[in-house]
Image (cartoon, rainbow, N blue to C red; front, side, top):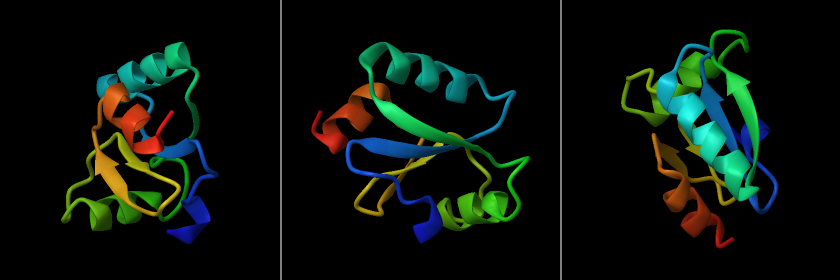
Length: 86
């Protein structure tokens, strides 16, 4: 997971191209100027399994990783903003 730990003030978001919740979160983060690195779990080898590990066996997206190494499943933009302290 350390390969995907983001820089301070940003997140790593695991997603898929067809995920409506992912698209909504990206739009909200863009509107608020919150940086993120998107990782499509259908295109990057091993990331679907990582998402499953973080979510008790479920392949749920969006799953985000924060700079402190913690993760959240389907957070709101407000939750991301609060966690990042921005």
